[in-house]
Image (tube, rainbow over all chains, first blue to last red; front, top):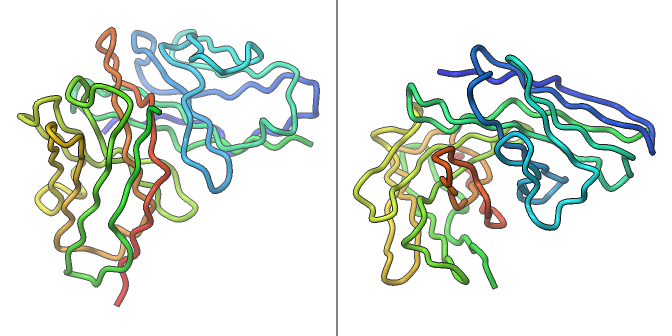
Amino acid sequence: SYVLTQPPSVSVAPGKTARITCGGNNIGGKRVHWYQQKPGQAPVMVMYYDRDRPSGIPERFSGSHSGNTATLSINRVEAGDEADYYCQMWDTTNDHLVFGGGTKLTVL
Amino acid sequence: EVQLVESGGGLGQPGGSLRLSCAASGFTFRSYWMSWVRQAPGKGLECVARIKRDGSEQLYVDSVRGRFTISRDNAKNFLFLQMNSLRTEDTAMYYCARVNDGDYVPHFDLWGQGNLVTVSS
């Protein structure tokens, strides 16, 4: 089955920019979605179709996709952004909706 | 209010059965694919089952195929997950999630609060 690879952890100082990557073979032609999960809460979608923000998600969140890597960027990071972040795509070969392993964002 | 509320679950024995329910409200339930996503303690997310709008097609991840059955009642706006032949590795938080397949690239745009299933003797 398809594997999406994320770094286990990313640390960033408040006010700086956090970048969380998601890689996989041949994802260049595929759309990637992103979810934020805070401790004890259900996931919330923060980005879809690589770079579209759902209503209610701050403009500080942005997405990009180049080659086989998708990136979620969070500008001017705040303490409230500390959470686990998951990328997700559609594996059309097996018709599975696949998640990356998740990245824990720590705000220093 | 647009929401998904899960119920059921709890403690099950290895080899036993449990049934999860998810009540949908605030949107046209029959217009969406629906899914169950689980998260083992301290682990990541895994979509274990999806069901088509009219219930005519169900898709499962290999680890639950033949043991779990996803179904829906569009008249009452409910989603179900019947879990049989439970294994300890099925222990997880189970989330009901709405699938948005606009532009034909499915993603989860609405989640329930989660329901904990523990399989233990």
